[in-house]
Image (tube, rainbow, N blue to C red; front, side, top):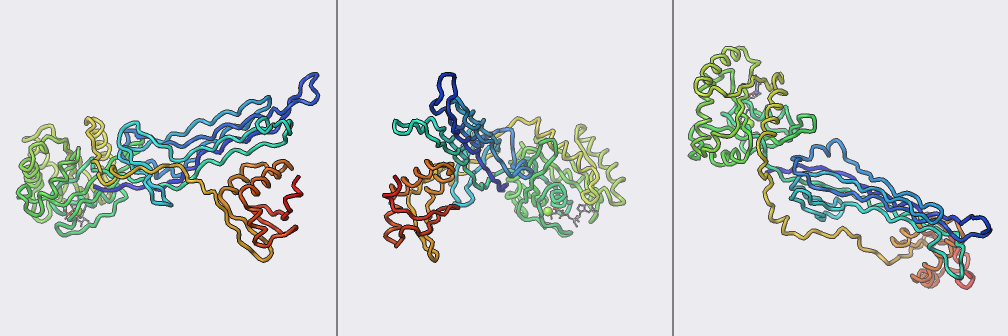
Length: 436
Ligand SMILES: Nc1nc2c(ncn2[C@@H]2O[C@H](COP(=O)(O)OP(=O)(O)OP(=O)(O)O)[C@@H](O)[C@H]2O)c(=O)[nH]1
Ligand SMILES: [Mg+2]
């Protein structure tokens, strides 16, 4: 098991602004308010697509910004809602909020989806603010901001392709040149003692997970050299790349190596003998390799005429691209089995609500002679208000009084003329009787 990870930023669409507008019709000199509401900003939705295997795509695109809603229009018409943005993720993706560490969703089945950032509501147009007392309001609201957050995607994956072979044939080296993985490489046997995995990007939107497994030796199927441990991993891979050292170093015979490993696979589980296998004839950069390969091909074809042998050198990278394409093609041909294991600790955990908890309170701090009002609610409200009209200011003042901000300021010593800062705005404190 290994975890493919990606950190991304999502920002849902802002709502469209409401507008101030008045009817202008023949014979109606002073038309009523006619400014429509803004449209809703786009949500960002993550949806499971079973065709995806890795989080590779998120290495190239890490920022997702959804479109905003349209502005309100005249004659009371709504601005259009923005179309939601759908991002495809592979099955088995756990979505975590970076700030809180909360699991937002744990999606396993095709088509499952979750809203990771909600689009903002459209602002109300001036039609909506009309009252009998104020039939022609000069007041409209800005669209609400779309949610934004940093998200960590975690995918628990199993390997699609397993590298098997004797120790020191170059399995780890191969993985290191085709993926971002950094396995330990060494001229001694059993350099690798636990599997390493890496994501291989084949291009054209195709990618797969490759496992570099510890070297196998004779008797592995009986457990020699931790054989069982390693073979269990091979069992789970869908395609086997059998790496054979063609240089015949250490007096070894490539054909015998190949046979011995295949015996171990078959003896451990006969199914493994049927698994699609490509032989990667490695170390072709060495002087004896060419001659050895010729011999190898002859002998191998006697026992298995349809065997695929691809000469490569992980050192010079010769033949590597062809090998990867071949592995990807084989994977495409194999019927999809579920590769995602149910991760019980996660699926039993509650999926947390994405709704933000409203924070209704406020805090007043003093900076010399200035009083600063800190409140998420008021900040949000001020962002929505178009504070260029007298009416909007009055509405804000009423809200502040209603929330108890006025009383608290007075208690803390604010008097007529004291400077009060809220967000980016500074006001003079005015005794409420003079509001009207
Ligand atoms: N000349 C040459 N040497 C290679 C090539 N690939 C790997 N080697 C060397 O072979 C040695 C063993 O490489 P590893 O990648 O560690 O082999 P391994 O199969 O992972 O070995 P274990 O983990 O012990 O099973 C290292 O010294 C590599 O530098 C190649 O294409 N050409
Ligand atoms: Mg190794």
